[in-house]
Image (cartoon, rainbow, N blue to C red):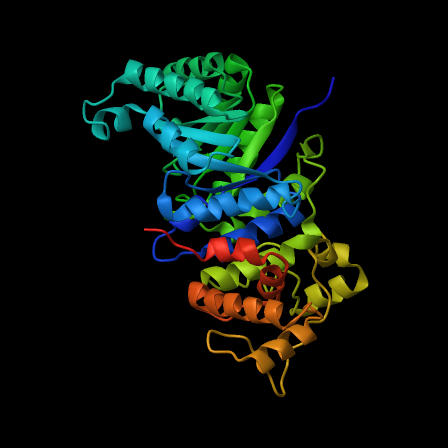
Length: 411
């Protein structure tokens, strides 16, 4: 019998972008999907199919999967568990195959959020109808989100989840929406849920009490102990609403190196060597610096100054380092240009633009192609409202039609 595994579902492009006072452009969201694909992430919850300013971006990224630019990763959408949302989703993004349908399940939210529009039974009815309609509309895999699961009565959470399973849901997302769980409570609750429902469990935690990684790991452990696969929701650099979601790199490191996790199996496709580039890009895109003490990727994650620590690390890195910096793609020198620089921006001319792409070793077939890419690079700078990084410049040259779609906002 195969042992259950722990998979990563990256929700930066859905939950991370809901972080107050920050945002990502559609190009930046696309680049993150590419980095997550390189990291071997199982699935990216890449946006909101019923939000119209997302439509071109979502369809463009699904086209990238057809071209195998996003070759391994699944792209999933988040919608409310209503038939209207399902209908709008498939009208705007007809090729989408993976969906998470969300509805609140706690007494608090059913009473004080729905305000009499739905009761406990109608919450289940609405969810069941939506799941069935999603499959009828073309979905291949539907997960059901129990919003505020951590404050939901256990008997009702089981009843809700069993109804979701009977309707065809392939996973239940346990949402610690307020971040009120502890490692003890989430382990006990998910163990009961997974044993009762016999479905894989997604673990979606928030960091309001500073325990988000611990809660995510214990939730996954509980699902695995019950014989079910676990899918931890993460955000890169711990972004997310309020105090944030579970940090992508911290979660992976905790599964790989945490005491007591030796018998648990992380998705073998995970490639941590791509983490350093991905995290640096996310920091630049969000405009949020990486804390120096961030696990794995902070500036001080492998820095030693005190005499005892420096001496011990120099004698044997295992004295004071739990894992190797090379594993995260760190260690190579980074070249910083200190002389003349020609950059590509919204007011670039053709000669300066060609110089930039020559340094990137990106050739153009003819002047017409170069002119088209230049125009797109100008738009991209307006779109991002910041200078483009090399990976973005290369992406635009490789997929100009996709880039053009990303920059098009239809009212």
